[in-house]
Amino acid sequence: MDKQVLVVGAGPVGLTMAAELARYGVSVRIVDKAAHRTDKSKALVLWSRTLELLDRAGCGDTFVAAGHKVDSANIIVGERTIGHVSFTGVQSPHPYALMLPQSETERLLEAHLAALGVNVERAVEVIGFTDTGSAVTTTLRHPDGRQEAQQTAWLIGCDGAHSIVRHTLGLSFLGDTLQSDWILADIHLAGIRLPASEIAAYWHEDGVLAVFPIAPGRYRVIADTGRSEGPHPADPTLDQVQAVVDRRGPAGLVVSDPIWLSAFRINERKVADYRSGRAFVAGDAAHVHSPAGGQGMNTGMQDAVNLAWKLALVCRGECAAERLLDSYSQERSAIGAQVLAAAGRLTAVGVMKNHTAQVVRNLVAGFLFGLSPVRRAMANTLAEVSLGYAHSPLNGPSAHGFGGPAAGERAPPRAGQVPVGAGRDPRFALFASAGPAVANLLQDHKDLLDPTIRPPFGNGGVWLVRPDGYTACVARDVGAIADYLGSIRGGVQQA
Ligand SMILES: Cc1cc2nc3c(=O)[nH]c(=O)nc-3n(C[C@H](O)[C@H](O)[C@H](O)COP(=O)(O)OP(=O)(O)OC[C@H]3O[C@@H](n4cnc5c(N)ncnc54)[C@H](O)[C@@H]3O)c2cc1C
Image 1 (cartoon, rainbow, N blue to C red):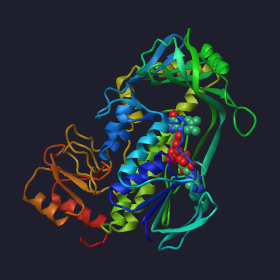
Image 2: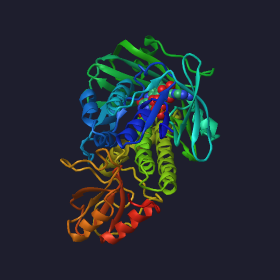
Image 3: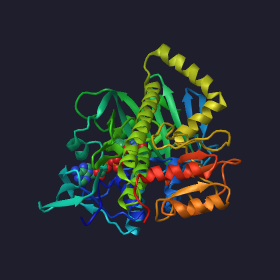
Image 4: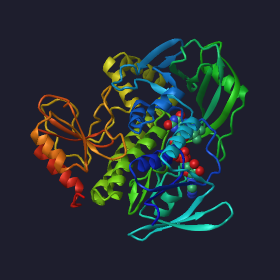
């Protein structure tokens, strides 16, 4: 076996997956059936949590420098702003939404991957595979028609909504297609009164019109248009986009200079299991949902981060496979279900057609958005900093009374501190007061622990944080941490 892992698909999720594995020293091959990277802007937003995870990989700054920062979102009915959600209070080094076209996100991820010594092999299609129990043999088709068999220990399908990996595994993609079509236009927009740092969603009796700044002067407009006949809705003309903007938006907006005019229909589907034997699915191959909230690509990239450190520990022979790898599906399937439900609710609220229901919605929303805890919770949910793994089977003990994050919760990155999981080794980090017991623990588990001890989150407790920045356990003393690390090791002896 010349490679340990084959990643199928070089979209944002496959690129993140391959880069995280390569960074942690796993030999990885990544192929994509498309001859070129996408030139479409598709997913526009990188949220705070994704940027924190890119910081771990050492490339967050590159993305921030290339993107456009947005600090708030408005819900507007007629002339009235009934909701204003600010991201500036999000407790993160990145308290904003970063607007960056997906084509750019992929370009930067591919450059990051290349810097780690891995190049995407394009125009190479996966046409099937078999899992023998001890390895996976995948059939690749090259542009000249030649077929190649690649044997790897693991296979990861990051091959999008029509995933061949998911189909071959026979995983059901359960869910529905929504009864509304949407238009999308990346355009120049003149006459807008809102600052270029704010998103606007106009709730109109006909439906929703959302306007996202991409860069000064450049905007994305999306609107629901009702269900059309045929397998795919027709792309709009610029005149049709102007007509929707005239009807639903504020007076005086003029659209021009389109970069991309498209239409889409929303599917809400997900698989129950993200793992089957030696194969995994991640990103759109595992879950698709409404773009409301802009969570799809971010969720997929976070799937990749979740799996990569676990698989790296297994490939490096530092931990046993089953418990760690099973937890990928358990943790990410729960998040996928949550994101799918939240995006569905946001969409349903926006496209409501019944007049009485709209009046009630506007009143309730106006009331709720008047409450600062609601606005804060919404900002944290969108930024994905409040998501965690409260019910993960990988969680260790979670002692109370010390403050700080509980087991399963995100350990918030601290300014000026090297992020947990940075560097070339997948290491857990200790947040504890230094002392002989901590020093012994480091010595006993030096292959799993980062040698840097960070100050504790609260008084007296010891926190163990996973390489993806989520809390594994909170304990009164290091004994419980040693037991936990022993259990994660799963019988594998330290080298
Ligand atoms: C019009 C549109 C607008 C969108 N807007 C948003 C948004 O605003 N916010 C948001 O979060 N998301 C949005 N999305 C969704 C977002 O684009 C996806 O969530 C994201 O691309 C998923 O990334 P992925 O890597 O999982 O899959 P993809 O980006 O689909 O990448 C899969 C890759 O796998 C390759 N592949 C497929 N089959 C094979 C095979 N057999 N062999 C080899 N390679 C294969 C494909 O060529 C492709 O490059 C939008 C999508 C569309 C289409």
